[in-house]
Figure 1: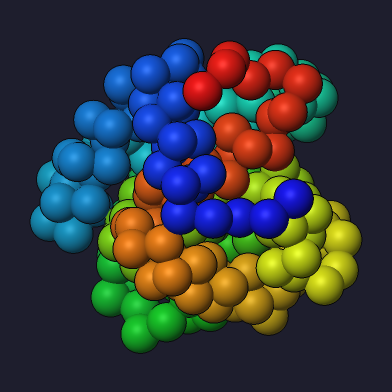
Figure 2: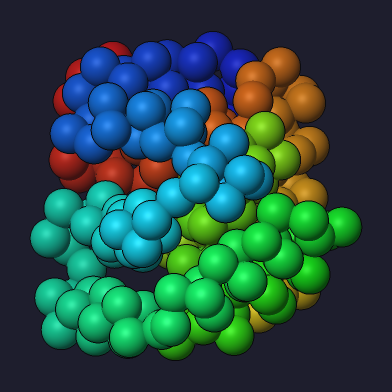
Length: 191
């Protein structure tokens, strides 16, 4: 599979039109960055990111693992969540942002990347097996999804996503939606 601008545009458009969570995602891409930056958010807003990371797979993610991560995150003191998110907001790079977030229970590198994508959607892209595999199949990444990915692996993935977003003249969220949709070949609606 080769990634092209027209494929990315078509898949991102189809994602917006057909993905069950597209509307709520768009609302949160719009509102959460400001809320996280100002500190004007509640525990449920932060927990939404963790729930979203797993539930966007619409039941394909093992339920016991999803529940465990969600429960562990909910057990974090909210002051610790606020501190970690605040540090991520002010981080100089992806590694610092991920490091600040992974100190929280229930947050590994992929979940931290989801937080970063809602902290600064113009800069960060969510990592996971589906999007990584899409890039690997397109010859844009050289190795299979490292489960779980390390911070350096996420930085490599993010660098490639930035290159592709520049090449296709799109924002990182648009690229993410196209990659996520392309990775779900068996369940896609036609474009």
